[in-house]
Image (tube, rainbow over the protein chains, first blue to last red):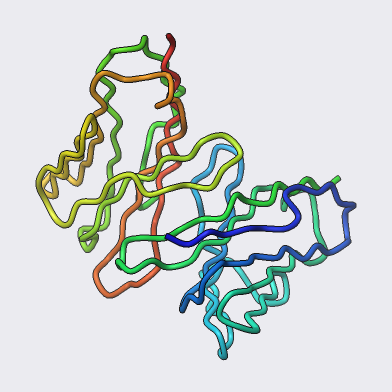
Length: 114
Length: 112
């Protein structure tokens, strides 16, 4: 299994600002994923990040709002841009395992936007 | 209508009880059915998976899939306080690598 760390673990931000969340994996992985977990809502996939290509965004999520970088096989960043209180959520990164149904998750970044 | 529906609870049971957690879904293309467990302030971790219909047992945990009813269940026998967590069902279509569809999660508390 992969060990995943995220920075920051939590942050409180002002409306209109941007926050970049880092995700570091202890081994090289092909696919990295970014999820949003809003209070009382299901875990929702934002985008899939493969090294060397543009991230693939899910319906309802756009690159201008959630730009993603994937510079190598162990690291990715997600930026939440021009934040509003509706962006308050937990953001999690995950990586694919050996099995198609398996993903390993980081501990999450708890974001509060005032 | 959400693709996957899960009662968020919370569910509170005494230690030793049998717990039943359930999800329903609408997309008949789902082939993989998973249960993830998430402790407070941690990321989800894979607990069990089932491919297509049937039952799967792992210690105190049993996962069931009924594709005809589009209904999946997780049973926990002899529940322990350490089982207190949020349980999320997740589903995946064949060929849709990585695109897990999660339920809301059910928060379980097992009281000593």
